[in-house]
Image 1 (cartoon, rainbow, N blue to C red):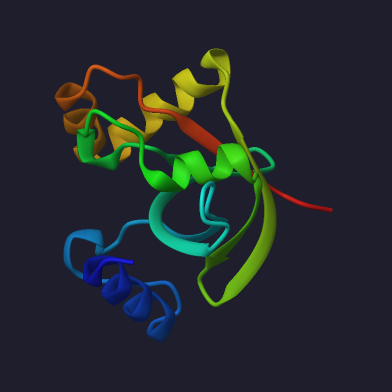
Image 2 (cartoon, rainbow, N blue to C red):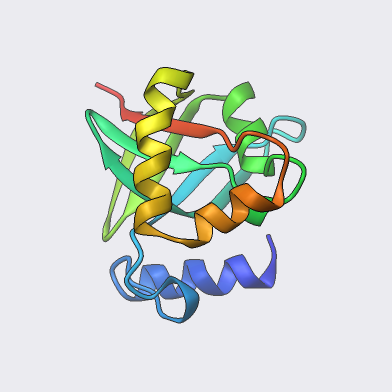
Length: 135
């Protein structure tokens, strides 16, 4: 895990899910995945959006030409855990189909202008993943 992510995770946990800096005021969760290749547990801090029956997260990787590692992990191992605030929740991850993705993505770009910048930096369509609580 990078020092950048480690410091965000530490701040998130110390402050009940709130962080400062570039994420001040943002809706942030910690996504726990199982590595697609390594099988090791990974934690990724991500911005999220509340959606019907769960949460949406965005594989933007700041507009890089490739998807982030956590995205490959959820494709291989869709049973994940998330931390929101002081709690944690077991979820099942799936990739939103184009019809579901479009309005969620547009809301995210409107709420967080950086996501429109990420979209402009890359030729790939940025995947939107849905995290639905397991029963």
